[in-house]
Length: 107
Image (cartoon, rainbow, N blue to C red; front, side, top):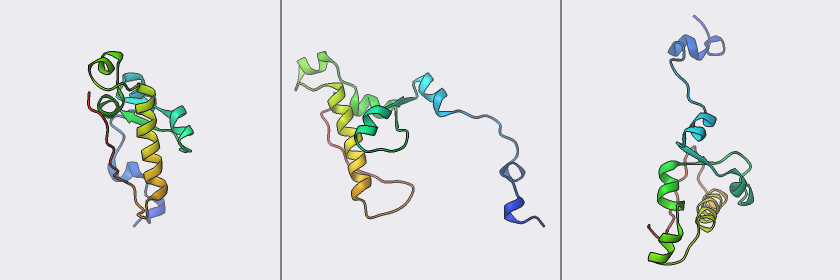
């Protein structure tokens, strides 16, 4: 019987059928890289938002501002990454997920 150290993932699960890298997801528009803004907010690792999060919480146009309150895309992105960073820094829980609330003006 093999011990855990000698057992590879491929021997357990079989060969990789397909893979999809972060770079491919960014190129395809599935993820939006927000690395430079995230670095300013204190993140030390690469950060990307899903296109759904981007559309719901960040995307904003001048037309949106004319129809309601004035905002801009950069400010909305800052709010998202800063609040995520703040939630991480102040969390007393550990684990692989951290839920946090973000209030935003809907489009």
